Image 1 (spheres, rainbow, N blue to C red):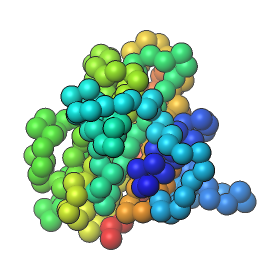
Image 2: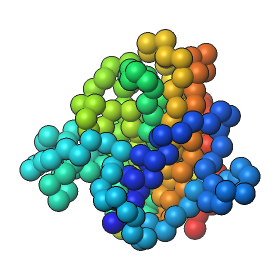
Image 3: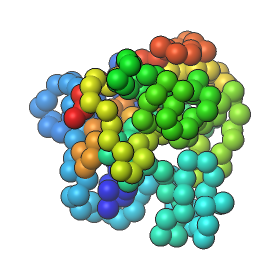
Length: 227
């Protein structure tokens, strides 16, 4: 159920645009805040399975591609069993493989550690000691490396099951690395799941926002503390 609700929120959030970035609100009369849209992931949602991705049937993990696994007969985004998950989704119309990057500053005992594509080994622990990892890096170098029906235009930072995100202050950023095809607008959403609470933020990049950014690049989307 957690996975179904999380993916449904991603799909719903992707339907709208905002510029400048602001979090979607739980109450209609509320102004922008750092809280985003927070829902209890244990609450039933009408409409059944809607992952924001095409529902791709599978028998083994091989058909699902990087960042996904076969669960209950369908390709499922990794990370739904961990205590913290941050997922970036974007799409321009008509769709082209634009290159956006998800960054997370994680606190560690030796100081902040940035999780992003530059952590070359992308294993645990990371090269700077982070507990989380970037599990899916899409459209790097403007190359569409994923089946669009499964996981294009998605980046995902996950914390494996039975691991505890370190206490401290976290910063989530999104960078428009490269405007691959002169796209005018690239709307995006970021979903932050902490246990059974999900916050969804939305925004849009324009062509002139692309910066070929590396460490410390990007637009700050949200900040939060753990625990």
